[in-house]
Image 1 (cartoon, rainbow over the protein chains, first blue to last red):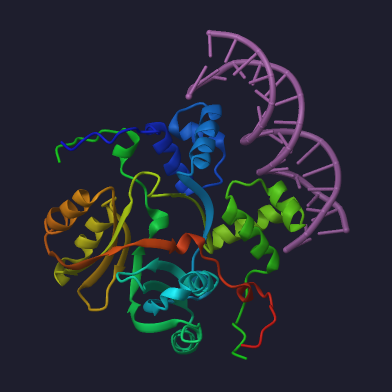
Image 2 (tube, helix red, strand yellow):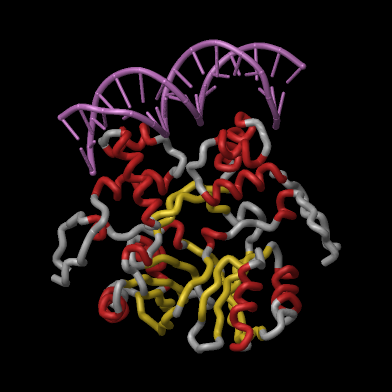
Length: 168
Length: 168
DNA sequence: GCTGAAAATTATGCATT
DNA sequence: AATGCATAATTTTCAGC
């Protein structure tokens, strides 16, 4: 058994509520209360607390495929260290970019772009990105399909103090 | 000018509503209606339609950092083609995995894992993954920081029929 | 497809345990 | 921290435009 992780701000009720909100963030507190077997006032307070603490964000997530963005590409950039802040700001503002992260080296950046067709992708790789001062495209790789993403992620039950049969 | 993309199921009102829902998926239709300057009944119908069409999912997204998952790692796997379905199913069920995608080759899989510390990461890389029949770890790379992810993504205004000063 | 008005449901504020 | 209760606000239903 590994060490019991310090403080757990949430419990199994929070976990159950979270699962419902994950299915439908607009579900009424009354409906959720019914499913998780709790008082609706309690449910609302728990939701408010999780959001206020910043543990959870209730949001609208848009499906790129629905809008015709059928192509996903991982792109590897190298940037001018002196212009890092402005370049990252610029990249943040580009709607084609669905993922932006620091890469392995100190001047490496990884991004994921979504495009409607290969023409759009090519234009982005050969004109948009190289057109940003201090940015050079080191390579890219088409992503054949994404099966899971952060929006479907949930911490394990243990993080809510729920002990599943444990013998790890 | 590139070709006008076929049919646009949504308009600028949908776009405005979406932006509000992105900030807070539980915002009341009345509040949203005030901000976007529309009737509340209309707002509700637009929301329902976007969700029913599958363009948007209203969900709770959990912040891994809040729960102590401070380490992100990109991991590259090669899997036995004959066991693809069962392996992908297995990977889907692992809570450490926040991203799962097909990779470049026909037997390549890319995943992203989140861990509380390097010990947990090491255990995952050296025992959990190799313990899955048909899976071998080809390499991995620590991700120093993620600045943007799919949950913050929105299609460009053009996809809602909004013509910004365009001269691309 | 948008809006109006009444009924039903849900959310909020205060108080109690 | 959870809940009961009264009040306020929102959502739903049934329309008409």
